[in-house]
Image (cartoon, rainbow, N blue to C red; front, side, top):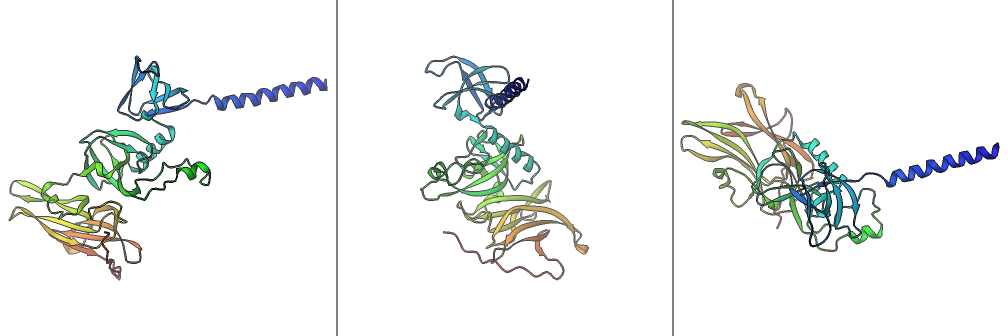
Length: 341
């Protein structure tokens, strides 16, 4: 009897172990279409027939991998099956990264309106070798939210559980010199959020204001209010500028406020401050100032000479701009900014 019990439990343990190992190997794998659209093909040869069309963002079930990993066989949500190049697909991790960006930044205030120069990929992380999911067409309007500078020659990021001391990680490290370039976190009209290469977009500043940039790069602008000029209203702007180069350790180093002279029908500089070490985002607001009443305000994030970050509040009583300090507050040490050549 004891012998029969032993064999019964041994058989049960074997079934459980083999069942668990089989479940892990049979785990369903998915990928997401990272191109505007792509064709499915019935075979991986020069001559083939189309078996379906898949579109950006669609989830595809992976059915088979080729050994060289250039093609995978997939099934679309409509049941179409066929082979597709892996370069048209994003993995689950990239898709999840995009979902987190969208959830975090869906209500973030825009720092500038911009337009794409050409078709441009939206990446999950800033960098040329990071995963992407969405491709924006040329002349697409987007909101710019945040800026980061990264090395153009940086290797592809390693998986979170990768061993940084492994031979694979060592081989991935680039021995090329660092070339820094700017990337912008952008949000499109469908609320997709991702990182785009800075040189592939331009800030869509009204030409009447952009002409006063004086060779500087406008990185952010905000409408403060409107001024009545005869039968029309003209906006007045807060504009943040920087040197015309990538890779700087600050987002902006100059602030200007452009007010509208209704008598002369032109913009004039109501306020200018240079040599700043400013970081986005900037914030607009309103506040009551007793006799002056409720005024428009803006808040800038600035660093002093010691690198300590603080917020500076400004009030706008057209056409006058003034810094606002709390009772007993001392102005922070002045930042004497060096040009980055």
